[in-house]
Length: 221
Ligand code: GAR
Image 1 (cartoon, rainbow, N blue to C red):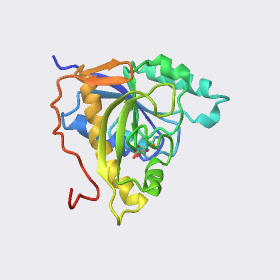
Image 2: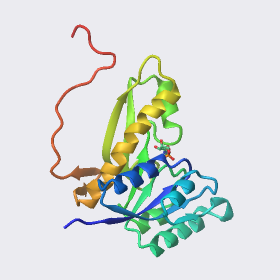
Image 3: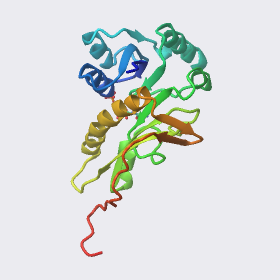
């Protein structure tokens, strides 16, 4: 039987990843139901998206709390009041406390705009670009108590071109984020994710071809 997973979404900004999840649910590709979206930023455009799709939205402004634990406890209470099973960090720009992580053990997914463990933390796309990498990409992972350190579920790799800017690279990565995040949630909904230590085993997926990529392409060897 098809299982619908009840999700809660944490946002801070534009919410384009949030939108991709909405779209995939509406198109019948993603077996999830968005119970609530929580924003720490009262001005986040993601809140407009929630309104447009009749999704309950709650603003919890971190500036109104004395410490991180108090703020996280409020988020836990709201998510639990909507019976959220899986928490989705869709461009949520706050570091979660151990209190929050323990409230949803291996039930929090984050999207990070780099190939982890490279470029953990903020401004990942810009730092990858400035570093001069030839490939970058994005990762969906379960959140643990570190910053972008939890077990990786799925990654997508994109090339960096000579005429890129940090912005064009960011856009290329974002397009892939919009694909792998709904996919990771769908794997979860289908009961396909098994966590063994640091490793997430995605059950019964096709093996990808062993095709090394080179950027720039090899001309001789
Ligand atoms: C996305 O690129 C996401 O990977 C990144 O913020 C952007 C949010 O965009 N998240 C992080 O950097 C987390 N450290 P969105 O609001 O349009 O989904």
